[in-house]
Structures are given as C-alpha cells and as structure tokens.
Image (cartoon, rainbow, N blue to C red; front, top):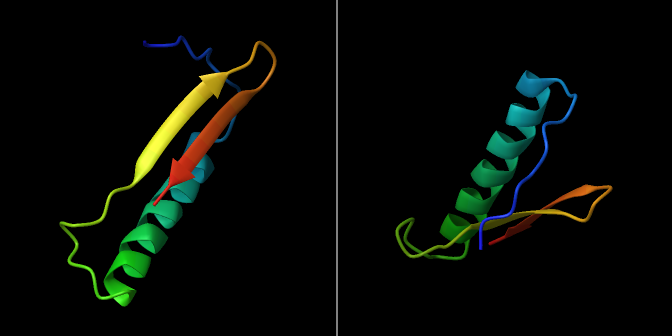
Length: 59
C-alpha cells in the first residue's frame, strides 16, 4: 500500500544531510561488523498519522 505523505516546510539541504549521515553510518556499521556491503539491508519507511510524519530507519 502506498501512503500519501504531505509536503512539509523544511530546510531541504539540512534534511538531506541527515539522511546521508544515517545511511553512511549504516554502511559503516555493516562493514565494521565484518559484513560485506552487499549483504546489509537498510529499510526506510515513512508514515503519516494525520498530524505527524514519521520516518523509521532500520539497519
């Protein structure tokens, strides 16, 4: 099911940097644990509860 996430007011470059940092940390952690880069999985899920936009990141 694809859920509609409304537009938000933000600083796009700063928000982008947050995502880049999280992804970089996930890759580093996967490599640090002896895993090959191709074996790790990073899941990103967005939700809208009617008031808040939730972003869940799992590695």
